[in-house]
Amino acid sequence: MKLNELTAHQAYIGLRKKEFSSTEITKACLDQIKKVDKKIGAFVTVTDDLALEQAKIADEKIAQGEELKPLEGIPCAIKDNILIEGERCTCSSKILENYRATYNAGVIKKLKEQGAVFLGKTNMDEFAMGSSTEHSAFKKTKNPHDLTRVPGGSSGGSAAAVASNMCIYALGADTGSSVRQPAAFCGVVGMKPTYGRVSRYGLVAMASSLDQIGPITKDMEDTALVLREISGPDAKDSTCVQYSVPDYTEAIPWGIENIRVGVIKEYFEEGVDKEVSDLVKKAIKELKRLGAKISEVSLPHTMYALPCYYIIMPAEVSANLARYDGIRYGYSKVKAKNLLDVYLSSRAKGLGDEVRRRIMLGTFALSTGYYEAYYDKAQRVRTKIKREYDDIFRDFDVLIGPTAPTPAFKLGERIKDPLTMYMSDVLTVSANISGMPAISLPCGFVKRENKKLPVGLQIMGDHFKEEMVIRVASSYELRERAE
Ligand code: GLN
Image 1: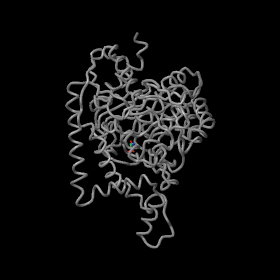
Image 2: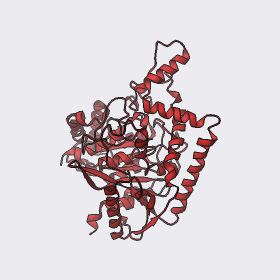
Image 3: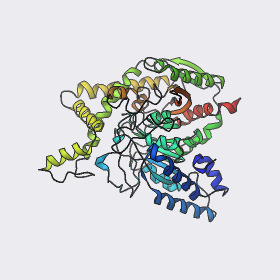
Image 4: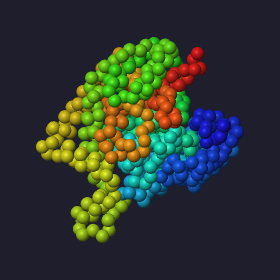
């Protein structure tokens, strides 16, 4: 096995036993980036100098016999909306093309304390708005399983980098789907933690009441490990809770005897590809065989989650993106007639179509006369959806369904049709609306044009019950061993 193909927990063992060095794993990843990223396009910036310097520090520590931390010396990729001090942070937008971060995000601070190695920043839909990474102002990322298809989005660069072994693991961020859906499309694991579990400090805000950073990994053990290391309180983010963080890796061998699994009826209805739902149903049978108690549940408010999301999210987007005014950050049209012209022309030139569309929709939904009809109503619906989930978790430990209604679609297929693009999020937005944790893990492949495309199984849990989600997901992942 090549070093860049390792998982983080495998790399940790090898580093401890001195079978290889951090510099060797880092170089293996950088070589793989050089070799395949021309065709995949996962990275916006490769921070090779930083990575090699961090790897050297880790190797020196190992040589001095210092105790190795679990993620020490292990190379990862970071979505380009998470700040690393001194490095470029573009959000794949022209307006931030040359912006350099002046501080570290909360999660980066935690990973730095671990001694992690940062390989670079990954491509995304501009400001995380999209489901295919095609809305990046810089390049289109391709799906490693079929280069004519999208990797999903908005964290498409991170998911494609993990799937093509250009890094050991990656961080993404999920506002409506952006960790789970690209993980599903690329055949890797992606988890959105409970809102408030992981600090959002230094994550460039899209919709602040929905955004959450999460790990994208090659297996469940790495998800548990990375989540444990990035979770926990942060004085700089008041929405990040003070609860202590359990050791999620401990949940892996617990098994799922008598665990109550609710299969959400509405997640298998109209618009969901038959082969996708068949694979998910097959996975559910496996959970039953492993001892879980399976029942069907109906969540009638599910159909309102997507429209509710597409009002609340743009409303927050319109407020959050007001700061890109051509003065405080990034691109500025210098030859402007007056101040208003600076604002208008910097934003018109610096922001892409999809971002502008959402700013307009959001501004409209918040404007006098429409506020009550749209924003206020959507907030009430949000409460109803959240209550429906709170109630259901009295009777169930986890809920289950597909991550996305279809496998990866073709590049260009939905770019001109925003509504069809938005439909990709229909099964994932509920977790952001309610705040609950949710994971996507691979559950098989469907065949399209002689290519095997991965399908994701989605498991959702009650607030701050990540260990239950991880327990069920890893039992499924390790099912063969349970025989
Ligand atoms: N695809 C969703 C959107 O376009 C979600 C994006 C995200 O999670 N950042 O809004």
